Image (spheres, one colour):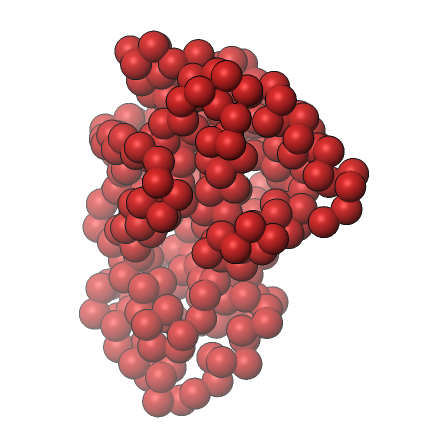
Length: 270
């Protein structure tokens, strides 16, 4: 790791030294590295994972496992995401409203535990495109150390590899709400539809990065560009088609461009 990158992480450690810190924790590479960095100098490090219908069970299980390996205290709270009409209606500002709610839960938990500060893992690589959630975080008072220190996603992965963290090459993950075009109402059945298809693609094809994008009676499957070659197996494709039809889709497509962040924002007009 370059000295310049090391200095960035050192600056975070120095700023949080001796503090009692709550880390918003998903078990992804960013929040895992943040938890690791914080725990090295903070007086107390507590992890908080918010579960909801929009978080795949496999991600919750992963977060629990990673917290155990880090040896850090993990608190779990559930958010009744679908009860918020502003979220379930899936308007273009959904991420803004969601981050407001999450930040409020993080801050309330920290306050009730006598903790000094709440941190979350947004990086400097996540400022491009349509990012309404960033505005909500800025307004909330929750701190984003990686963003403030101009630490990129690749620098975080480099840190994870150097420290031997299991998440070093873990694909990015976003909540299941991102699978739906804005304006498409989100309900439990539809969330289960896309989650079932994604889990099936992982299990059958062995890919690591997958998104099942909902388009009414059609599901558009994205996998990592470097994993597209794994998808051209007729027998396995037939299995996916049968599973997708069983959960309610009529048509199943493979996006030949592969996974890219913000795919549902490509036709967004603000």
